[in-house]
Length: 137
Image (tube, rainbow, N blue to C red; front, top):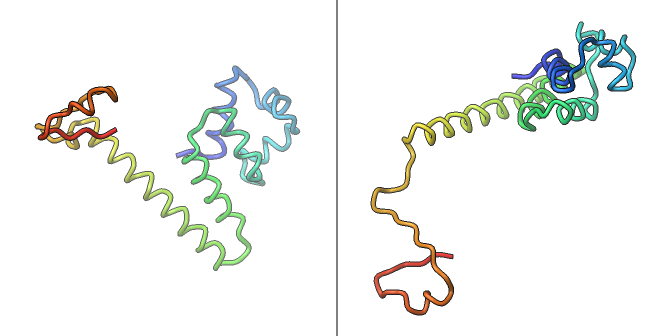
């Protein structure tokens, strides 16, 4: 799971940036801003977060989850914090289900039925299709 720190490091790595000073120049922010992000004194706003994600080629799902978690941290009331936390849990649950489905497909637990066949056909052969055949285009 991405954190602001790992996201900053991902952008640095992706663009060959060696220091937070150079990262700040690259992002057109102050070095103090980067330090505040790293030490949790402030968090990037939503637009900056998504810009960092694009610069780091981070999957949208990971950034959406991080954005929601940051909203929970910023929430000024317990009720708002609980709302954002529930949303984060749902997003995280969806990511877990998607990952499990991908593993099952890769491992071959979810496959086509053994008697399934794919047929490539042209429009000319559809009119000559056998009576027991089914063509889906």
